[in-house]
Image (cartoon, rainbow, N blue to C red):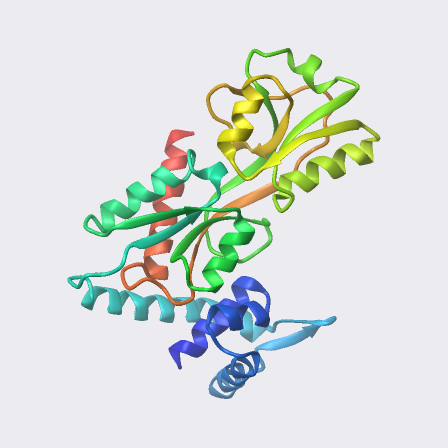
Length: 289
């Protein structure tokens, strides 16, 4: 089977969109359609079915996913082996600012254990922006937040949203139960931003959006000064912050933190290596907990 066609197939599975798959593989949608038709001819099965206005995978399409991942992974691993002694550009890692303390250091450490001589560059942006950068080939891998039912990337950790305040500023009941809650949130494209505001509005709870920011450092600094409360992933809660257990605040959604690889990978970072690093990270997290 054609590796590029399998790569396009995986891009569709991960993104759920032929539009994004085309962007990721630097092809037109018509070229992607031709590749998918060729895969159907080679396998002798229909791989896609209509689901309302969208396309989904047939039973045979679902079966092809694991084979496609293994074939592409083995291909990239072989190329990585034969190019391991060449000089390569830095491995560019994308990471949301709120995971820069809790997830990124362990990922970098695991990469250094495997590729001790490889230079690394880090870009901090929100998950939405990092996905665009992956599509454009501007970063090689990214730590992302995805919905629990999505297929994107390699799972690092299941996480839950929690309400957070500065530690020892006021009691949880005082700060969270004020008539008008003061919010300090990540930017609107953050899942917890919309969930927090939507949840409060459904409760009929009065709130003031003090500020929103893409900077975890800024948000946490304001929280430590007792200027409001925030919504974030449990793993993002760091020193000087505490989780609010009281106050009748709305429930926040669960998310998955994953490691995603660019469709055209860095010569030394294949999907096989991403899978190995995600397993090692999960093992470390389980040992810590």
